[in-house]
Picture 1 (cartoon, rainbow, N blue to C red):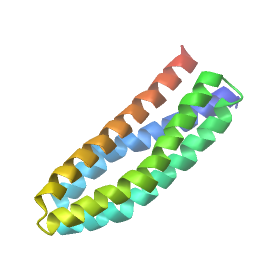
Picture 2 (picture 1 turned 135 degrees about the horizontal axis):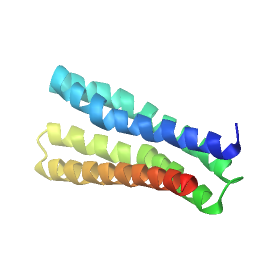
Picture 3 (picture 1 turned 90 degrees about the vertical axis):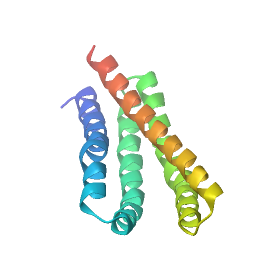
Length: 138
């Protein structure tokens, strides 16, 4: 298998897992579980989701370093965004959610804003992965 083919496989694995979470896991969690159970599940899930993203994006960046500098830069940026989301954004989201559930109205708005930022980051990462793959194929 060539380095480019392995890179494409890695990009597909990460993009596919991100799509699977957004399209299948998240909607199912909120339909099948109570709000409290869904929250507990997601708090346990997201640190692992972000670690998976960091590891696979870092592996993709390492492969991309031998293929194309732009692919390397984009994969490295995706990995760094996973680090930011896990280490900085997720704790703030959790703290805002906790304060919101304790009745802090300002925290509810803060949670919504931070959650929206996390969704936008995730969407940008996914688009970047798809753009890299398209550029490598085309």
